[in-house]
Figure (tube, rainbow, N blue to C red):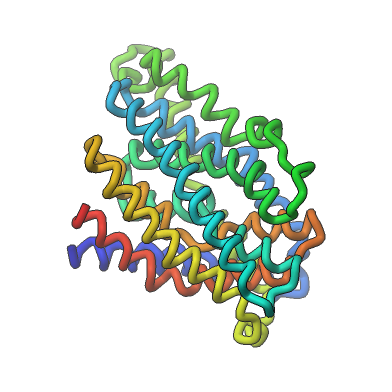
Length: 330
């Protein structure tokens, strides 16, 4: 148990250390921070996340139990986000100091964690070489996008017009999942590539290595992106906005507790041993960076959104390792 706590704490610290180069670059006057953030965001969303999906699925042989776990992770992610989002909206409603624009930002920040840009790199560090655990993480990303573009947008804006099932489905992580899942079911993968002779074998092995190389880039580039965004934050202002701490408390304490409760409930009906790490790690992640994107897009309190991401990310150094201990208990 102590080993998992130490490994988890070191993994979080290593991720944050990866953000240091981005932070330094963001403070350099010669660097166009806005352009760098846009480029890295495009790279992560349109290039690297699909490679993560293909790397995990194409290096995993078909197993019916894995298919069952995929469905369980998907349902768990949607359900946990929905529960916490409802709790966040209810909590924000009874806090008079929060403006109308801030209430949705608090609820959204508390319900949507950094599943793609932090959870996947975190699990890559925590369980190096374990592609199955990354496969389940990509399922959470698909569920996250579905919830973010539908109920998430509604909670943030209070306007049903911003619910977009089309965008929830037509995005690179979801589309790559839709392509990779049938290949997994048909058991089309790289498992026998090393046994293929001649040029065809070398080609398959080369493709496999290229996909893995792109997949491994997610962690460093995601953290450089975070560092660039942190460079724009006025840290003195972090202590003057209670909304950021409310959202962080919901995301780092309430959400993981809901996640642990749901995982324990699921354990009564199925074996959650292979997915408990995914479920709890996903639940414990800090506020997602896309709360900044959506709050800016819909003219909400984007300053509060940035503070939520910063505060929750820094505090997650303490909370993520603590909640990982529940993996041993369940």
